[in-house]
Length: 41
Image (cartoon, rainbow, N blue to C red):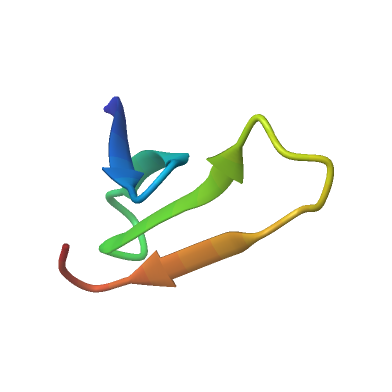
């Protein structure tokens, strides 16, 4: 699964890891690396 979500002017990727049962992703199209993870969206 590879989807995107939008927050204000930012676009972030959303992926799911079946083994760890978590969602994770990163903010796209910026110079810095901002990543995130969680158990639900």
